[in-house]
Length: 92
Image (tube, rainbow, N blue to C red; front, side):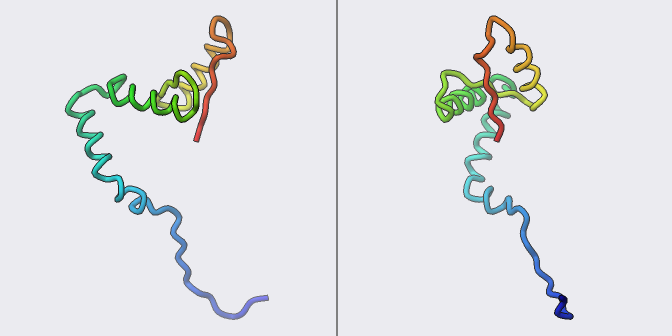
């Protein structure tokens, strides 16, 4: 059954500004550190991220990779000895 009228309703899908604004300065400082250091791969920021992730996941090591494809490749390569059974991937 229809009521004969429609209402314009705006439903926000994703408000990135609300998430970004409280941590903006922290993000800009981190970006500046990486750019100033010129270590975009395997620098101290990546090392810190991997240590923090390992702690959050309650494991001894975590490895950050650039894509889901690399996760699949690494998981496949480690599905046979000598590291079989020791690789776990978590996707959020």
